[in-house]
Amino acid sequence: MFSGMMPHRKEFFDLLNAHADRVVASANATLRLTNSLGTNSSELDALVKEIVMNERSGDKIKMEMVGLLHKSFITPFSRDEIHALTLALDQILGKLQDVANAVGMYHIADSTPESRELAALTSDACLRLNRAVLVLGDKTRAKEAINLCHEIEEIESKADKILKKAITRLFADESQMWNAIRMREFYFLQEHVLDQCQYTARIIEEILIENA
Image 1: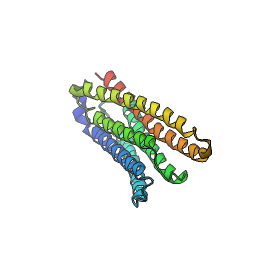
Image 2: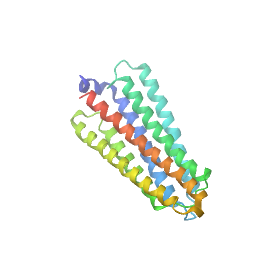
Image 3: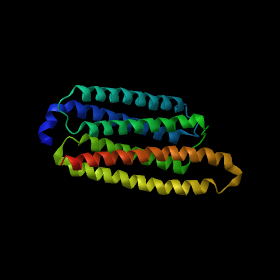
Image 4: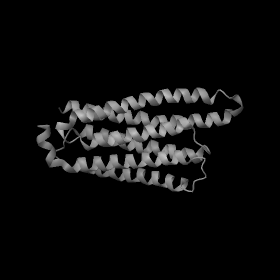
């Protein structure tokens, strides 16, 4: 039944794919932003604007999806599942924007090896999410999508270890306490993105299992 209904509602997958594309674009911009800190790069403002633009684009896609849900009789999987996945992708974009905004808010003048590694892991996780969403409509590739979701969980677990190490190193030098407080907040915002990626991956996995 699941596979038979999908061809009638290609629009849903087009919107989900577009939303996931915005997530990847924003994550990549956030990675470039983090790597540019401390280099006197003139790109910083442009990268923040790019991240904000992707978040706004995601909002428009979310509203299109809500409209499509209201007017559609047939959906590829349950309305609640589609709505949950749409909101989860939108939350990733919002949390990436939080990271970008924090650069100016907390006056983050330089990155650290840990912040750069967290940004790289975020980019990797978002790319895998994008790929999982892309194959969501193909029942024959369900195992591939589930494997991608498991890889995202492994990435998040790795990020947890990096975060703990980073926090410990920050507070080892009491003379840099103000900088430690600022960077701790920055790290937590980065980690929140990865937590949201993991949450979104679990939604995808649940959809695949429910509609197998």
